[in-house]
Length: 151
Image 1 (cartoon, rainbow, N blue to C red):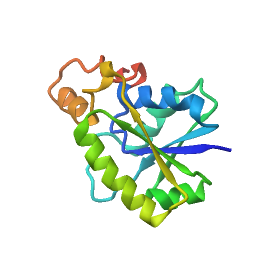
Image 2: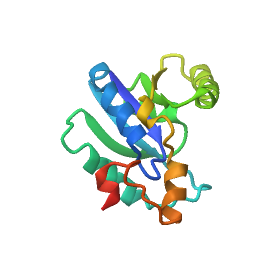
Image 3: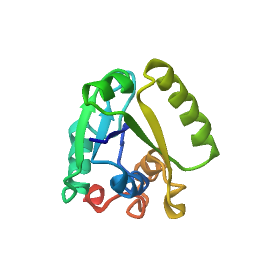
Image 4: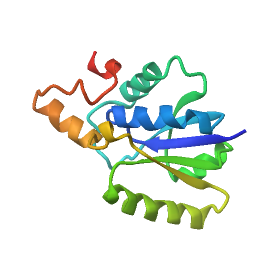
């Protein structure tokens, strides 16, 4: 069984995340959207809220599960019997950062492969930090997030 872990903070989930996950469905038997918990990071939305948004976004997709984890992503992958980490790339800066993380992960766990998917052009500018900034400043963020986040 081909299981991919798509890790992130999803604070909040964006149309870019949704795009990468939906386009990767044909590649895997199961995709675990895994919300990483970092005690030193300040989140705009609670963990429960982020889990609920992701569950609602993918409620009609039986191949998608939502989970939370702490610690190294490769250790979480091992616990889930996943040999794949799925990551989306929006731009060259994402690639440079994600390449370094993927290479470090590979040093720790050679049997776990990182798969990169380019975000669709219409989503390539969307990031959770931009969405949070628009929200904080009471702008219209509806074009950047799944409809469940708008509610």
